[in-house]
Image 1 (cartoon, rainbow, N blue to C red):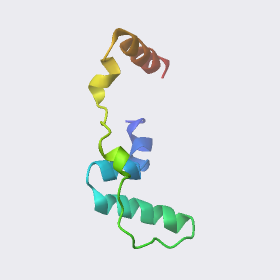
Image 2: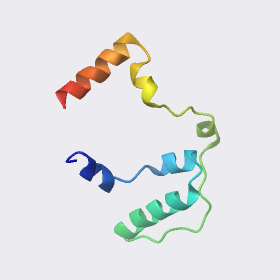
Image 3: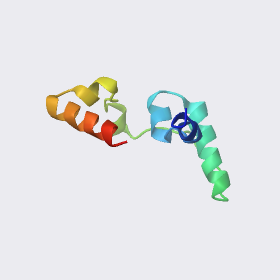
Image 4: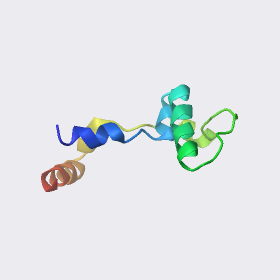
Length: 80
């Protein structure tokens, strides 16, 4: 429970929203950043650079993709 509270306050990255096709949420998140910084949010469309559109998103299985990676993952979890 204690660990979930700070996680709920941390927004997703704009890049993640754009990769998932969630344009509205990306714009809302950027609007909050602009508001905090005292800037005006531009009306331009949000888009990823062409080279990032082909990039593969990782998932939970990647944490255990090899013995070395599994060892690092478990060690990190135990340190927390």
